[in-house]
Length: 167
Image (cartoon, rainbow, N blue to C red; front, side, top):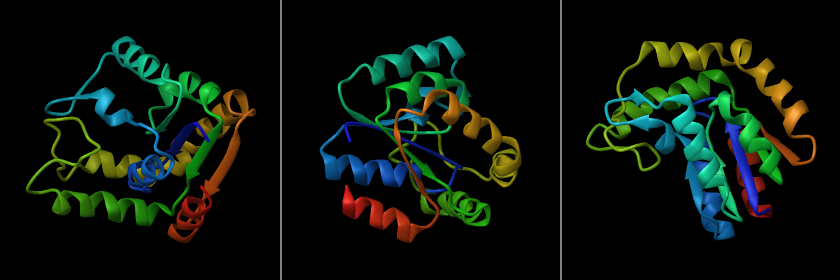
């Protein structure tokens, strides 16, 4: 594993897995949230974001985590391993809400500067409807861009731990 893409619903554990896997494999970690968000939760322009993603992925090895379906076509073809963290939506929602309290005194280490966690009903709706809204698009993108890669679908924390132990 030299180029690992970690995908899945918000709150599923992508960033935590990316950090841990990066440490285990001694690879740099690319958090797409850092590349996309500007202070105050201002979104990047699509072309600007895609340029930053392409530049980051030009490295010979990496672990990259994030949703951002608009960049699957850049990321999936370069990955040798695609890890789909496919946790239950209730758990993803719980973890997203918990982050608000966990990081109330500061910022998440895997988030862009100036983007503090807040109660965000639109974001929670995205998490809750992910299976209906995003999953079909993700599956299509995997079929189109990810057929060459090893795909690991991890549906629980236990499966995540087993994957890390084998890495």
